[in-house]
Image 1 (cartoon, rainbow, N blue to C red):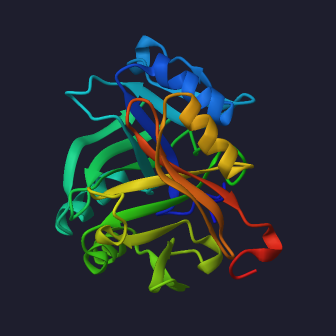
Image 2: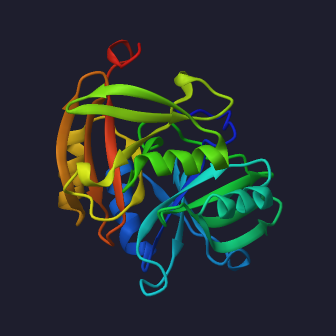
Length: 265
């Protein structure tokens, strides 16, 4: 489970890009109650989505020919530059070099061995997201990849992730947790790309918590989003669906099972 301790290798931030933040901000306001806090020129217009004054995600206006509308996960590292070297040694790549963001922290944009984008964050004044594991906040993440074994080898080499297998219809589901955490700190899953016809390209899929999955799907339809996978219920997990915002950025929503009914409870 995500938590505000933000152990090394765990998700610490998530942001999205789209050509027009104004159009997508109304979508996320209706869906999650988020309000867009516009960023100033000193940070290149980088903005934040907030819920009750607490940050839920970042956002950046980017022309579609420079970056397709998408969500990006950031993983915590104690040393960005060392992590960049580890990524390169493990067969990954660099999208943009390490850079300091004032006193907030240091970051780099990277790709894994299958070419999937992600970022890393070295904490400064900014430790991470304010809203986690509650309605409107990040709660889970999934990596869709053509080679699960290779992906686990890559991220294991870079971050030292541990893994846990959970029985799943037709097989098992591989969950990951930080090196200095336990199975209770699981924050995501690694999924074969060909296991879901809805997925055509490898990528990281963020999940945001909602009170009512079906209501969230109805809101997404009503406000110009795309329903990529209709709501599905899974015992011990909850009810979830895959969506895309009006610009095409992909994400998922999850209505968790009550605590006493969750897997491992």
